[in-house]
Length: 93
Image (cartoon, rainbow, N blue to C red; front, side, top):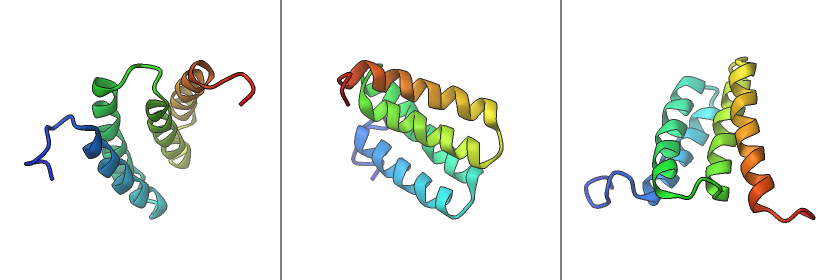
């Protein structure tokens, strides 16, 4: 897939995120983070800073850090996700 799409294509981010999710479900948090962070780097480059997909990405990283017991890192990413969602969702959501 990487040979036919540019390295920062959002579809690659989706694939990386899905792989990260499987590793997360398996309890392999370091491997999950590796893929979530690859996805996140692509999204940070290709999307505006308040895009909901970026919030989803930060949330995944935060939840993984939570699973690893790294609570301050988890909180940092979860707060980033919340901040984006507060900006891009209606107040009644």
